[in-house]
Length: 171
Image (cartoon, rainbow, N blue to C red; front, side, top):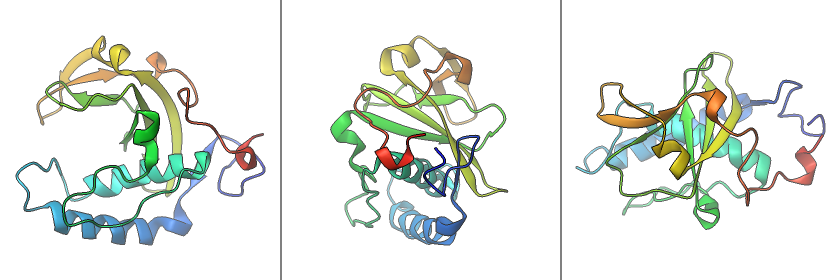
Protein backbone atom coordinates (compact mmCIF):
# COMPACT_ATOMS: atom_id res chain seq x y z
CA UNK A 1 0.00 0.00 0.00
CA UNK A 2 3.04 2.22 -0.16
CA UNK A 3 1.89 3.63 -3.52
CA UNK A 4 -0.72 5.81 -1.83
CA UNK A 5 0.57 8.57 0.48
CA UNK A 6 -2.69 8.51 2.46
CA UNK A 7 -2.09 4.90 3.61
CA UNK A 8 0.71 4.02 6.02
CA UNK A 9 2.50 0.69 6.47
CA UNK A 10 -0.07 -0.48 9.06
CA UNK A 11 -2.94 0.07 6.63
CA UNK A 12 -4.15 3.26 8.35
CA UNK A 13 -5.60 6.04 6.25
CA UNK A 14 -4.57 9.62 6.96
CA UNK A 15 -7.82 11.61 7.03
CA UNK A 16 -6.18 14.83 8.30
CA UNK A 17 -6.18 16.55 4.87
CA UNK A 18 -9.96 16.02 4.64
CA UNK A 19 -10.90 16.40 8.33
CA UNK A 20 -12.33 19.93 8.30
CA UNK A 21 -14.22 19.29 5.07
CA UNK A 22 -15.76 16.08 6.49
CA UNK A 23 -16.72 17.96 9.67
CA UNK A 24 -18.33 20.78 7.67
CA UNK A 25 -20.26 18.36 5.48
CA UNK A 26 -21.40 16.34 8.50
CA UNK A 27 -22.63 19.45 10.35
CA UNK A 28 -24.74 20.39 7.30
CA UNK A 29 -26.21 16.90 7.17
CA UNK A 30 -26.92 16.98 10.92
CA UNK A 31 -28.72 20.34 10.56
CA UNK A 32 -30.75 18.93 7.68
CA UNK A 33 -31.74 15.65 9.34
CA UNK A 34 -32.04 16.73 12.97
CA UNK A 35 -35.72 17.57 12.57
CA UNK A 36 -36.73 14.28 10.90
CA UNK A 37 -38.44 11.74 13.13
CA UNK A 38 -36.75 8.90 11.25
CA UNK A 39 -33.21 10.07 11.93
CA UNK A 40 -30.89 7.96 14.09
CA UNK A 41 -28.34 10.66 14.84
CA UNK A 42 -27.56 9.39 18.33
CA UNK A 43 -25.09 12.18 18.82
CA UNK A 44 -23.94 15.18 16.82
CA UNK A 45 -20.94 13.22 15.55
CA UNK A 46 -22.99 10.35 14.08
CA UNK A 47 -22.90 11.74 10.55
CA UNK A 48 -19.22 12.66 10.84
CA UNK A 49 -18.27 9.17 11.98
CA UNK A 50 -20.28 7.57 9.19
CA UNK A 51 -18.87 9.93 6.57
CA UNK A 52 -15.31 9.14 7.70
CA UNK A 53 -16.01 5.43 7.24
CA UNK A 54 -17.53 5.85 3.80
CA UNK A 55 -14.81 8.28 2.74
CA UNK A 56 -12.17 5.71 3.77
CA UNK A 57 -13.76 3.09 1.54
CA UNK A 58 -13.94 5.66 -1.27
CA UNK A 59 -10.20 6.29 -0.90
CA UNK A 60 -9.31 2.65 -1.31
CA UNK A 61 -11.87 1.61 -3.95
CA UNK A 62 -12.06 4.75 -6.07
CA UNK A 63 -15.87 4.76 -5.74
CA UNK A 64 -16.75 8.43 -5.67
CA UNK A 65 -17.79 9.80 -2.29
CA UNK A 66 -21.12 11.60 -2.73
CA UNK A 67 -20.85 14.76 -0.66
CA UNK A 68 -24.11 16.43 -1.71
CA UNK A 69 -26.59 17.46 0.97
CA UNK A 70 -30.10 16.60 -0.23
CA UNK A 71 -33.36 18.03 1.10
CA UNK A 72 -35.06 14.61 0.93
CA UNK A 73 -32.37 12.79 2.88
CA UNK A 74 -28.92 11.52 2.22
CA UNK A 75 -29.51 7.95 1.12
CA UNK A 76 -26.13 6.44 0.34
CA UNK A 77 -23.12 8.76 0.54
CA UNK A 78 -21.29 6.78 -2.14
CA UNK A 79 -22.28 4.21 -4.71
CA UNK A 80 -21.73 1.27 -2.38
CA UNK A 81 -25.39 0.30 -2.74
CA UNK A 82 -24.61 -0.83 -6.29
CA UNK A 83 -22.42 -3.50 -4.68
CA UNK A 84 -25.04 -4.15 -1.97
CA UNK A 85 -22.63 -2.97 0.74
CA UNK A 86 -23.20 -0.85 3.83
CA UNK A 87 -20.22 0.78 5.52
CA UNK A 88 -20.23 1.02 9.32
CA UNK A 89 -17.72 3.03 11.32
CA UNK A 90 -16.68 2.70 14.96
CA UNK A 91 -14.73 5.12 17.16
CA UNK A 92 -13.60 2.26 19.40
CA UNK A 93 -10.18 2.01 17.75
CA UNK A 94 -8.79 -0.73 20.01
CA UNK A 95 -11.87 -3.00 19.84
CA UNK A 96 -14.34 -1.93 17.15
CA UNK A 97 -17.44 -4.08 16.72
CA UNK A 98 -19.70 -4.32 13.70
CA UNK A 99 -23.23 -3.32 14.81
CA UNK A 100 -26.62 -3.04 13.10
CA UNK A 101 -30.06 -2.58 14.74
CA UNK A 102 -32.09 -5.78 14.76
CA UNK A 103 -35.22 -3.82 13.79
CA UNK A 104 -33.57 -2.23 10.73
CA UNK A 105 -35.47 -2.72 7.48
CA UNK A 106 -32.38 -2.34 5.25
CA UNK A 107 -30.15 -5.40 5.16
CA UNK A 108 -27.50 -5.27 2.44
CA UNK A 109 -25.67 -8.40 1.39
CA UNK A 110 -22.41 -7.17 2.97
CA UNK A 111 -21.27 -4.90 5.79
CA UNK A 112 -17.79 -3.35 6.01
CA UNK A 113 -16.40 -2.10 9.33
CA UNK A 114 -14.01 0.85 9.50
CA UNK A 115 -12.41 2.06 12.75
CA UNK A 116 -11.89 5.78 13.33
CA UNK A 117 -9.22 7.31 15.56
CA UNK A 118 -10.41 10.90 16.06
CA UNK A 119 -7.31 11.91 18.03
CA UNK A 120 -4.87 10.97 15.25
CA UNK A 121 -7.34 11.69 12.41
CA UNK A 122 -6.93 8.27 10.87
CA UNK A 123 -9.04 5.29 9.92
CA UNK A 124 -8.52 1.61 9.19
CA UNK A 125 -10.58 -1.04 7.42
CA UNK A 126 -11.27 -3.77 9.99
CA UNK A 127 -13.09 -6.29 7.81
CA UNK A 128 -16.45 -7.39 6.48
CA UNK A 129 -19.32 -9.80 7.10
CA UNK A 130 -22.46 -10.90 5.31
CA UNK A 131 -25.86 -9.96 6.67
CA UNK A 132 -26.44 -13.59 7.62
CA UNK A 133 -23.16 -13.69 9.56
CA UNK A 134 -24.08 -10.50 11.41
CA UNK A 135 -27.57 -11.84 12.21
CA UNK A 136 -25.88 -14.92 13.72
CA UNK A 137 -23.79 -12.67 15.98
CA UNK A 138 -24.43 -11.54 19.53
CA UNK A 139 -27.39 -9.30 20.38
CA UNK A 140 -26.38 -6.35 22.57
CA UNK A 141 -27.90 -3.07 23.68
CA UNK A 142 -25.49 -0.14 23.90
CA UNK A 143 -28.24 2.24 24.99
CA UNK A 144 -29.94 2.74 21.62
CA UNK A 145 -31.87 -0.50 21.28
CA UNK A 146 -30.86 -4.05 20.52
CA UNK A 147 -28.28 -4.59 17.80
CA UNK A 148 -26.63 -7.56 16.17
CA UNK A 149 -22.88 -7.34 16.81
CA UNK A 150 -19.69 -9.06 15.68
CA UNK A 151 -16.20 -8.55 17.12
CA UNK A 152 -13.24 -7.93 14.77
CA UNK A 153 -11.99 -11.53 15.05
CA UNK A 154 -15.25 -12.75 13.43
CA UNK A 155 -14.89 -10.47 10.39
CA UNK A 156 -13.30 -11.40 7.07
CA UNK A 157 -10.17 -9.34 6.31
CA UNK A 158 -10.20 -6.74 3.55
CA UNK A 159 -13.25 -5.89 1.48
CA UNK A 160 -16.18 -8.05 0.37
CA UNK A 161 -16.53 -9.39 -3.17
CA UNK A 162 -17.47 -6.61 -5.56
CA UNK A 163 -15.57 -3.85 -3.77
CA UNK A 164 -12.25 -3.79 -5.55
CA UNK A 165 -9.17 -2.02 -4.28
CA UNK A 166 -7.88 0.31 -6.96
CA UNK A 167 -4.52 -0.50 -8.48
CA UNK A 168 -3.04 2.73 -7.07
CA UNK A 169 -3.62 1.36 -3.54
CA UNK A 170 -2.25 -2.13 -4.10
CA UNK A 171 1.02 -3.08 -2.44
